[in-house]
Amino acid sequence: MVSYVYLIQNGDLFNIGFTNNLERARIDLRPGELIAFLSTEKPEPLIKNLRKLYADNRIPGSDYYRLSNSQVKECRTLLEGDGSNNYFQPFLKGPRLFIFFMFSWFFVTYIIIEFAIDPILSRFS
Image 1 (cartoon, rainbow, N blue to C red):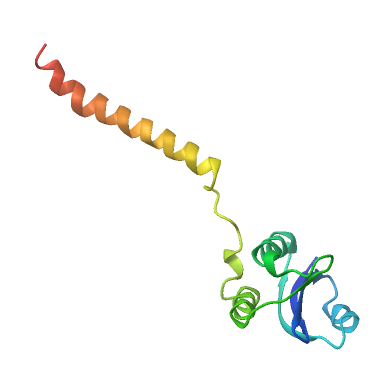
Image 2 (cartoon, one colour; image 1 turned 180 degrees about the horizontal axis):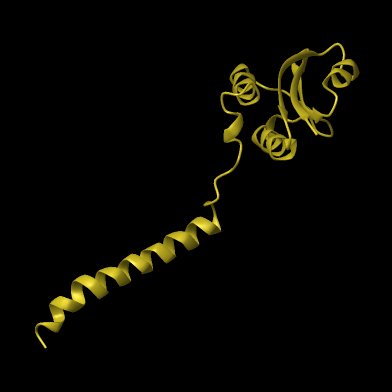
């Protein structure tokens, strides 16, 4: 089922949310103006990322945010399709990145020792 992730402006506040009925959300959030929206089958990852991205600007206890002009432009870009496929966080970050780096380091070291240093040292013994 198609859902909509939307950005609605009401004065100097912005509502970031999702709904199955965009027209109903527009009516419920009157007199707000629809700035941008994205129709998607899976709104949860995008809405989670947007809310995380603007968490510092959130009005406590609500879905309203006080966003700067650059943040509004960035959010519009994500919702209007230019960057809508880029909302997934990278897989390798934090502990996973560290573990991957350490594993790669040991693997490359082993390959160098096994195929470069051992053959040279075996000639001298």
